[in-house]
Length: 221
Image 1 (tube, rainbow, N blue to C red):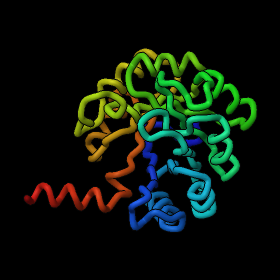
Image 2 (image 1 turned 60 degrees about the horizontal axis):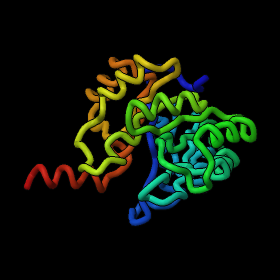
Image 3 (image 1 turned 60 degrees about the vertical axis):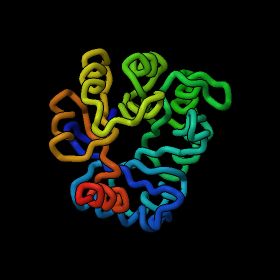
Image 4 (image 1 turned 180 degrees about the vertical axis):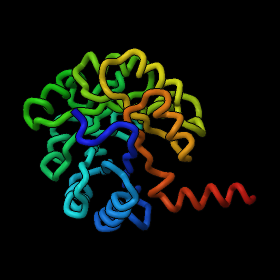
């Protein structure tokens, strides 16, 4: 099902609109460096970045398309948004797998069915809690990821990853579970695969020098 082996590293190459790296060329260079370091896949946002990265690397791309409302369903909120990154070269698509309503009124099951039927790629559901993971699998998701854990609730975002969610989803689901979200150290990534994660996605801790600089600055102050 997945075009990369288990117990492996996926690197997320994204940059915010305010980042000096916010351009497809730096993202492609970052992806190429990640590939040289041993990443088995790249997670990338938007058709422009996906296309540039697809030209730069041989490993598969998990495409997302952040076109929704950042306060709600934001990650690939519609099947049409998924189609844009597939056309650009993504071999998998990640979508918001939470139970929140989608902007076009489609259900998650309807969105996944359209992606399967029209674009022929596997779908990874980014979920925020255990019940959402079960519902996403029931809706047809091929892979479930813990990407949104800690980001959809009213409280502050936790500092570390949600390893408990990884373990609970692994125990409950019959599909690959991918660990993603606030993995800062190799030790945390290893804990995730020991908890049963098929693979681990790491982004900020590898590809966001501004955030890393801030962590060091805060530690020194």
